[in-house]
Image (cartoon, rainbow, N blue to C red; front, side, top):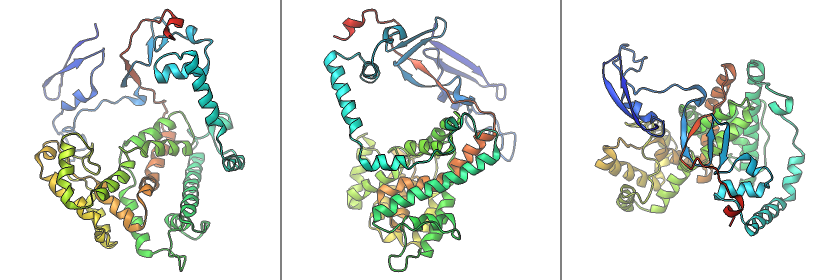
Length: 422
C-alpha cells in the first residue's frame, strides 16, 4: 500500500499534523507548516521558522517524478523505459539514445538518420578549436592524477582556489577584450583582482588605458552585495560536482551552466530586455495583466527566499545614484513595475516583491556592459561564495549527492522487442 496519511505530533508544541503519502512518498513542503516556539531570544534556534528536513547527500530524498528508469531493489532489476539490460545488451548507442530521449526504440530508418546526424555534427569542428585544445596542458584534475587530490588536503585546496580564480579572470578577460576589439593587457602583479579583471576585459578608457576609479569602486562595492546567497541552484550544482571529489574548475563550470538559465542568473538579461522592449512606463499595466493571467513571467520580481523587500535593493540603488544610472530611461519602466506590482493584491497576497535583479541590471548597464554580460558578471562576483562552499566541502566528511526519484511508469518489462520498433 503506497497511499495514505502520515500523522505527526510535535512534542515542542503538542500540535498534530496530517501529511499525505503518495507513491510511498511524503511532500517535503508539507513540513513547512510545522513551526516551534522560540526559546532563544537571539533567534539562533530558528524555532519560528518552518521545519526543514536534513538529509546529507539527499540519500533519502526524491527530487523528481520520472518514468525513465524503474529499479526493483529486491529483485535486482533495472528497466530502462521498460527494457532490461539483457534486452539492450547488443544494441547500439543510437538505439539507446533514441529510446531514452525519444521514448522508444528507433526503426531502421530512424536509427540511420540519427547516426548520420551525429556523424555530421562531429565533423563540423573548426580548425581553430582543434588548435586551441591541443595547446592545453593537464591541470590538477583528480582522475588524471589518479584519484582524490583535494579532499583533506588544505594546501592543495587553497592552491586550487587561486588557480581557479586566475583561470576564470584570464579566460573572461581574453574573451571580453576580443569581443570589444580591444588589445588584451595581461594582469599586473601590482594590481588587485578586480583591477586586473577589468583591465584584461578592456574595460578601460580608450585614450588613457586606465580604469575609471569611480566605476572600479562601485564594482568592488557591488561585489560585496553579491558574495553569496545561500543554497542557490548554481551553488547546489557546484556542490553536486564537488561531492564527487572533482576539481574546483569543474565545480565552477557546473555552477556557470546552471546559473546561465533564464530562471537564475540569466533572468537579469531577460529582465532588462523585457523592460527595454516595453519602451514606455505606459505599457507596464498590460505587462502586469499578462503576468497575472499566466501569459508572461515577470523577471525581477518575487524571490523564493524573501517574502518582504529584498535587502540587497537599497545598497544597489545607492550605487545607481553614484553612477548616474537613473539617466537610463528604461529605469522608469522598472520603477513603474515596482510601483504597480507592489500595490497589486495579486502580488501582495503571494508575498511577491521586487528582487535585486529588477535594479541590478541598471548597475551593469551603467558600468558599460551589454545584457549578455550580466550573468557572467554576477558569477564573477559570486566566485568567493562558490569557492568557499567548495573549500568547506573538501574539509568535511564527503558524501556524494545522489537523490532518488519517484517512479511513475509501468513496472512491467517489455516482452516483444521487435514489435516495439514498429
